[in-house]
Image 1 (cartoon, one colour):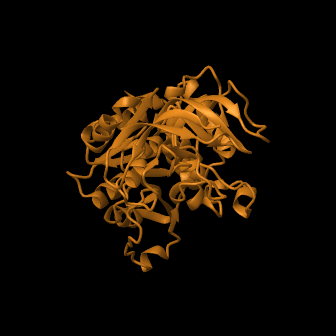
Image 2 (cartoon, helix red, strand yellow):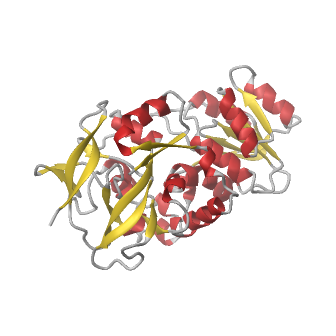
Length: 368
């Protein structure tokens, strides 16, 4: 029997989010129904809604959900009704990368999370008036009052922590934190540069402040975000609209270059500047995603000093251990995620989209 709920539907590429009555399929093996309490709004949602990715529309997006389990399907063992959960990406659980603790690089990651719109077997999870909709976004499609969620997307969390405060952990925050902790792994005295002070970049700044790195540089064009970056742990800031990035970073690092750079802007010109700013054996982590097919020119000889350029998906995090650790840091005040969050009622999703696009909100979180 289908489960009625209310969802924000995107009818076609470029169309706004509109609230509509939809039906969820009943939970199958390895699935659960979650009553949503909050869900973050991410640039990936906006990119798909604009028609920039081949996700089937009309459809329901949303991939930073947090809520309470209402019902579970057959063979679900990790959660039970009443559990508080954060929703993240899904994965097959059986390929080499999943077995090796790297589910963000699952062999079936793209169709299961980003572009398929269906379960792995091709069946739909959401319909409206008898017509199927694109769903199963990141195994959750959490822009709805209730979501049908893959068990592998579910992370059981401490019920004492307000779900509204931790919804963004499922994507943006774990991406920024994972870039620092799981890839750069700063050593004592390291210099870390974060290009872009949005939600992902500021998460990287907070993560770097919890490591032995002693120089943490935030770069952006918005003075208010740079001021916030300082409050969250940046030791230096560079206003990219007023200063030459290469000269500023050379001055900060004494000409030695950065040990690690996190590139969150998706601008290939900024990416190139970041690679050029690396010191010997430095690593740049590519997080920001420009349109498919985008290329960047690099000075090959400049790479011969041991520089590395590494792409990253979702922080290369193993969510069942990583997200609970982040929840504990939020609870203890050591990861002040609330400084990034602006809350909106679910019905005001389009206002949240506008505020995010205008730079008025760093991390909008919809509440139900």
